[in-house]
Amino acid sequence: MSGRRAINCVLVVLLFCAEAAVGVRSDPRLLQLVPPQSRLVAGTSRAAGQGTTGSFMVLTAENKIDLKDFYALTGGDASRRLSGMVFVSGARGESGENEHSLLVSGHFDQKAIFRFDDAGAKRVSYRGVAVLVVPPFARERESFVETRWLAILDEEVAVFGSAESVRAEVDRWVEKSTPDSLIADQLRGLEGMDDSWCLLLAWDRRRVAEGALRKLDERLGAVEYGPGMLSWGIKFGRKIEIAVRTTPFRDAPEEMELRERAAASHSFSFLPSAGQSSHIIVKVSRGRYEEWIRESAPPDPMLPGR
Image 1 (cartoon, rainbow, N blue to C red):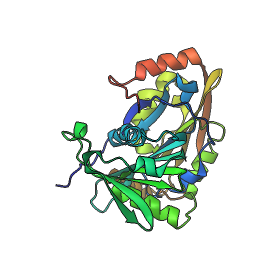
Image 2 (image 1 turned 120 degrees about the vertical axis):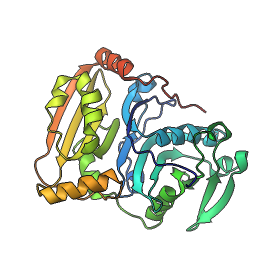
Image 3 (image 1 turned 180 degrees about the vertical axis):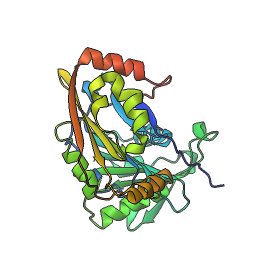
Image 4 (image 1 turned 90 degrees about the horizontal axis):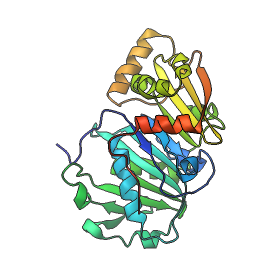
């Protein structure tokens, strides 16, 4: 067995931003790096609720570890500035295991960051891009023993995660790839609601829609959660606005079955969907939203730090 295991379940978690950083929404510099075969894509472009309110996102356990360790790896960079984050999970790996990464835009001093030599990190080159190969942190070795890659692209974008994911994302950067059309379309459908957002296959919908979103507002249960993609975005203001959208697969039963089977094994690609989309927007008071956040919080919420 390899040094890491697949994480098959999607966990509903709350991400609390530790740094207040306002930046462009749905940063195209990050979206262009997301591999089309990703199972889960989630992002945030500013500190949720101005750094005091939890932002509802769906991440895997590996995404959480990547975020915590990214803060540790870049903590020695006094010039570090964050403007947007995108979490990626479930890209198909040759090993069949879950691939995952964290994409961050802002400003980074590569020299300062690459001085990190704890746990035997070393520097290599991939397609002309300097990469820091990071062994598992000592504090994680009982449960997480994966060696990951960290790349800094033009001092404006950091990419950190499983080696295969980072290779794919660096490939897209070198080749000047454009954002995947389906991901871009889903985000256009959430325009103005992307302070925090998430895209995932709707076969995960029950845990998200019925386990969390419906508890915030019953109207969110009115969206047709058929086989396809589920996406939502959040806009923070005096009231919290949440937009939920579903995009179904084509109606052909054999295609639905093929996609569902492929999704279950993580071996699929995002492809254009057909059929009628369902879209709903609700507004709730900040008090109600924060109450829902407290009710939904996991037993040990992660607070990213330096």
